[in-house]
Image (cartoon, rainbow over all chains, first blue to last red; front, side, top):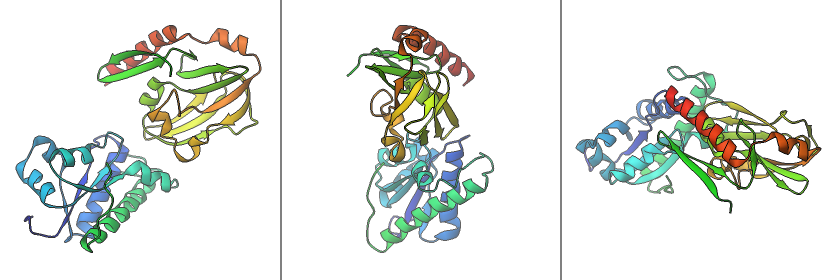
Length: 142
Length: 149
């Protein structure tokens, strides 16, 4: 991913062993692999935690949407601590509150509610991505 | 603003407000005349996780001591909250409808659950723990939880 390339980065939380972490990652995959593969790039949170120079350079050069499964907001915090800019921070719990029928369960494999919740999160991400690429920037909160 | 007892277990800090009484399972009761404000302790909210939804029994509901007065859905589990006092629910915290995260943010303040008009507060009061006693119970519970990690 070159710095001049027009892309929005998606940074999901790790949340290993946590349902909301799985939802976070599934939403990120859906956006970067299926919904907006050319317009987005996936950054592994672990690389930012390790201080990987390529990952840090990427978040400094591109707007980032972070997805966090809990209030620790590790993804948003690591993007900021890496010198990047969180264009929009999305909390899975907030999306669930707006879609109570989508109760997520499961870790390795999400139940139907979890899959649909990941899709709802993905839809919120692509709305931000499309807005950024069209020239309007979302609000920043982490 | 109450004073707090605090302890650190593993990487977590837990506080206990010193101006109220407690059930051993982590529900506090603060007497305001015959009306008792209730809520979850800091330990219970931290152990339960981020709150997604809180459903408190509506105003007018009669509850006996130990009856479920609220169900809290968190990112980890559904938590049934037993009432530390018997009586009638006379007020439900309106914040529980739209911003139940207040339970996590301010468990002893804005995150209160309900106010109950006590049927027999002296009897319920005698069965509850004072802050120091609950502090010891809570610390033992927290240390037990930490050993599972």
